[in-house]
Structures are given as C-alpha cells and as structure tokens.
Length: 285
Image (tube, rainbow, N blue to C red):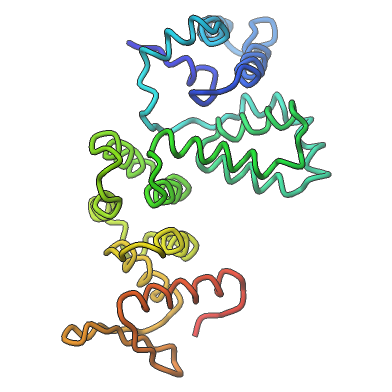
C-alpha cells in the first residue's frame, strides 16, 4: 500500500520546506515516547511513521522521486490539523492581537484545507510579511484550487463552494471529472452534471453560496445551475415567482410590485437582492 507522507505530516502536497520542518517538529514533540502520556507502543508507531515521512520529504532528491510516483491531483478530505496548530498557537494568538482580520482569513483557508491554513500560519510567522497577509492567502487558495480543479474560473469557484459547505463527496466527483474530461470541456456541462447528480438544487446552498455562484457566472451563458441558485435566493427571502412558458418570462413579486424578467434578468435580480441581504441593507419582504 502506498504511504502518503504528506498526510502523515498533515501538510499540503507542495508544502515548502519550512512548513514540513515545522510540522515534523510539532508532531515529534507530541508523540515522543518520553512525552506521550498514553500507550508507548502507539507513540513509537507514530514516531516511526513521522520519521519515515520526514526523512523522505526533507530530502530534495527523495521527495522528487516520491512525488513522481504519487498521484498529486487527487482531491480528498483531510483531518483537522489540531496537532500541528498547537505548535504555532502561542505565537499566532499574539499576532492576531495586532491583526485581528487574520482570524477570518485563516478560518476561510481552513474551510478548504486545514493543512492549507496551517501552512499559511507557518509561512506568515516565518516571513513576517504581515502587510501582504491577504495576498499570501489569496495566492495559496488560488494555487490549491487550481491544482485539484484546473484553471477554469467557474469550476474553481464551484469547487470552493462545495468544499466550504462540507460537500466534499461532490468536490471529489468534480476533481475526477476535471481529471477525466480535461480543461476544454464546457464548465457548464460539468457543473450542471454535478448539481444534478448530488441534488444540489433548491434548499441546499445558503444565500451566500448562491450569490457566490452567480457572481462567478455573471459573464457567461446562464445554466440550470445559475437558475437554481437564483431561485434558491428568491425562495429563502420569501419572494413569489412564476414562469410563463409561452413568453419565456419570469414574474417575481416582492409583496409590493411585480417584476417581469427574462432569464438573465432573473439571475441579475436575485444576485442583487442577495447581496443587499448579506450586507444587511434588505430584509425579507
């Protein structure tokens, strides 16, 4: 059975050397037989695994050979990185006193990958480039999504929503589809299929997720997935709507007025009221 050394150390597949070293140090401190309060046999087993993983990943030649044999493009769920976070917790808690926005930034990365959030903390603490903290997070997130889901903007945004909302089985299916079909296939074909297969229509996505879907797709041909997101916003906010098939128009009522909209107009209207609701500028009618 192929051993996943990156999972053993709890780091992302292309973690920098500093992150690998920090992860090893954190785990070695936790599972060292002299410090481990539990079963010594378990501590010895874990230390053997940790040392083996670090021995390969810390050596540039061995790591390159290992990576060439490993399928790096397969998305899979990760365990929480509590063992690792404990190694930087003291310094991180001091830093967020000065930059409280780091709490939200790290939490956003953790929704995608606990290992990604840990890598972010280690790199920021090491480089001390706190003025570039958001740019670093954006770069790590973009690289992570592109690695598993390709360069298509729509698919990356859809993947982010799936992972962030806990729908990792659908995210894995999305990863498989991109790997199988390649980057030349229409994103609409892939996204619509995933939504239908996992029944991600009405009632599934939150208003925020639905707005994000429409924001990502606003410059493209509207799909059934876009309409599902638009209708999800309308349903959640209490709007009534009906579709007139022979005129191909939607009639949306907000309790005061009726808006007559074509397909694109429905998407734009739903996106706008969703954004206003998230900003606190509009309540449910």
